[in-house]
Amino acid sequence: MKVIVNVFLKNGVLDSQGKAVQHALTSHGFRTVSDVRVGKQIIIEMDENDGESARAKVAQMCEDLLANTVIEDYAIEIQA
Amino acid sequence: MKTKVGIIQFPGTNCEYDAQNAFSALGCETQILWHKENAIPQGTDLLVVAGGFSYGDYLRSGAIAKMSPIMKAVKEFADKGGKVLGICNGFQVLTECGLLPGALKRNEGLHFISRHHHLKIINTNNTFLSQCSANEILNIPIAHHDGNFYIDPQGLRELYANDQILLKYTDEQGNISNPNGSVDSIAGICNLGKNVFGLMPHPERAMESLLGSDDGRRMLEGFLSA
Image (cartoon, rainbow over all chains, first blue to last red):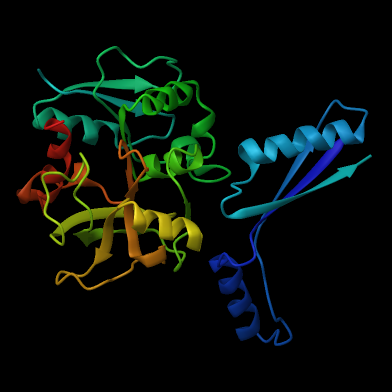
């Protein structure tokens, strides 16, 4: 089973990298860009058959290691 | 009795020997502790989580180091009141593992910053800064990419209320001068119990006036009086 984890800075925590990328894009002529956020995607292969069991384990991984919940939010997507 | 200092070394740590040299120069007994150890040597007075790039800063600075075997022992040591000092990457490790509040983000300007910086001493009613004076200005090197201290407004109020803010980045006159975007220009904090300390600047690199500054000496001397 493949599990995709997306980790991004929380709303309200300044994303300096996103702002720099946004500035580079707009100054490069992409004037319709109104916001950019830079985060991480973590792709996990697991020997699991049950999606909910996998989700619970990955949520624990996020809390323990994959995200720093002081500044980051995470989203888990299970791929069959 | 010599103060006994244990200095923790992860793969990618690179300030452990600077720290060892600094504490040896102050007359301490020092020992490097490899991260796979799962116990702290008997009689240790101070644990130093040294600077560097543990695990190549992979995932987040300090994130993987917190999973190392020795960190469980470090937490138990701290929970019993043992003194722990995290310098630079060590500060990041201590916030990651929850021994200190807040987090260290990428510098606001996105650049790695390596230069001397002035710091103002904020609170001295703790072991670490007991040999310094409040509002004193020190000159200490900084060298980091992820030194942008973040804490939410409630957490910040608690830091102020409990005298947990140790240092702020300033200019030579003591005016706030923020190199990395840290909340309120904070460069170092301690925990509520005032036995766990973390700072981004490197006092162990400011031990000889011949090399630019010996202001770090007075900071580290605080641990000798304990």
